[in-house]
Image 1 (cartoon, rainbow, N blue to C red):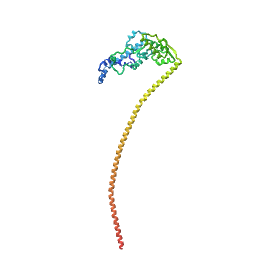
Image 2 (cartoon, rainbow, N blue to C red; image 1 turned 90 degrees about the horizontal axis):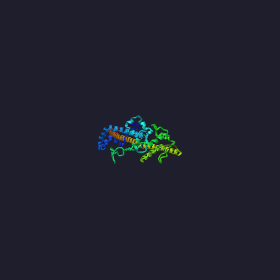
Image 3 (tube, rainbow, N blue to C red; image 1 turned 45 degrees about the vertical axis):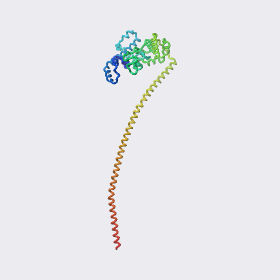
Image 4 (spheres, helix red, strand yellow; image 1 turned 180 degrees about the vertical axis):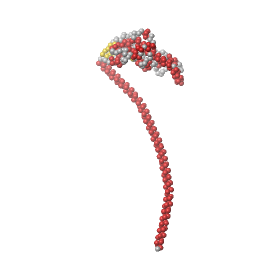
Length: 364
């Protein structure tokens, strides 16, 4: 059955994807996926084959899981090579080979390209990240020819030599842990050997030093590969448990402190990157404020322009009123002059009347 745990890790890498039958046929066409003008047609062509590609992706994931199962069974069971080789995809339908089987420590594996040890799903994620097989730019051809037509390398994707499986079993026995328990993690091993060191007593020269479980299992893997290159076979590893010395305890404590500081530094670095991204948000706020200020300035200018026009209109109206008042004053001044003229005539009449009166008094 298809994996549920870490299912995305079971997807093919780029060159592996190109080797899928349908994808291979598509990219084998010289004009497919190379001209942007034909992009829409190419996308439609890919969509037309999407169901077939999805089916091949499922088949790829099952084959990948089956390959991992065969590696595990070859080193952890007494099954013959022929029996293991005859296993087919239908074997994965057996409940005993579900996700828990691949998570338990007895099923942990080594990466086929380096010395990284872990569960199958964890290794596949590591392989996608560190060994992607999609060198940029994503070309279909390279120095050796058409990548879409080349078969994937025969190098195993994962490894579990018998010597490693033996050493791994001994480590769990010394740590009093259940190697078949899928809930056991690396932290459980760290706690189990917190006050102890491990020694590979019958290891090759240079491999018999005191070490932690991680260093020891990797040392067994390296020396096994070296022996294979020389056509030799190592004896089953004999692992011994030793109490830590005061010096080793002090070094372990210093290592723990260094690890804590490293985690803190990593956390601070993440926070620093987060804060570095904040000015962009602040910049948006500043731009928003500046935009609002600009709007206010425009409004003020509009008000000032409107006020100026109104003031000018008031001034014009005031001047018009002044002119009207002046015209009215001129009209009023003419009756005044008539009245003043009448007043003058009256004075002369009164003066003449006075003179006549004075003349009569003189005659008397």
